[in-house]
Image (cartoon, rainbow, N blue to C red):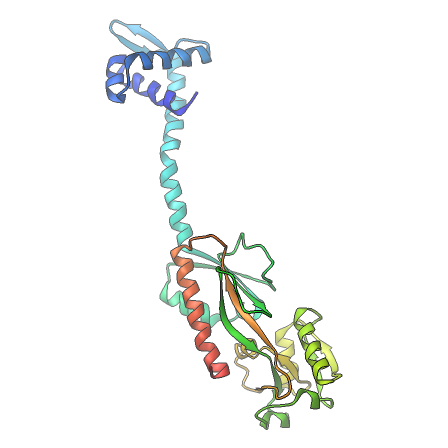
Length: 296
């Protein structure tokens, strides 16, 4: 039993006449007769009784009509429900970002002030380009290479620097040689992709650093440096977001490393308007922030 049969059946029941129903539906009367005959065969019972020139629903026909109306009403509601879903989805953006960037409230506060009707859902984690993009509409990630995909854009180049307490005499310098820091204590994140970069830097300048702590918490790393217990090679943009004025950031004179902080969205997808607005906002925001941090 298909939707056309149900629609034909309902119209015949309303008109109590095959002739009138055929006119309303713009189909032939024999077509309607075949439709009703097929339904009655499938159900194993007559659905109409003939009363004079009219046909009227019998008991079984009334049962079918009740369910036919429910089914047709449900089908009629589908376009409205889909439009409601698309409207709601249009106003929602799912963003994934690494922990420190997700904690940067200014970027999202600015956006929400401009677009208060858009719902932001922010997921936090250490994401890499290889992870699936099925869930997020936008994803911020770090890479050692500049983005090349059509669905990626560079937010900023994060040049690694040395973070030192302003109590440390090194903070008075404009730059520092990593190879000359053998007398400094270091703190760094737990082993991973970032520490692989750090070990490459150490090897390049022949430094064997005295590492007193490994910690995945940026707050703890910052506290150690702020209290002049250690120095740390850091992403200055990430640490800048903490607004800790007790820490100075020094570029290296003997070695350079950069990470590229990128924004990605699903491939072969036309961005919803809300997602487009957030993408453009993040590009502009981090361009301004990079200028403040690096002077670019």
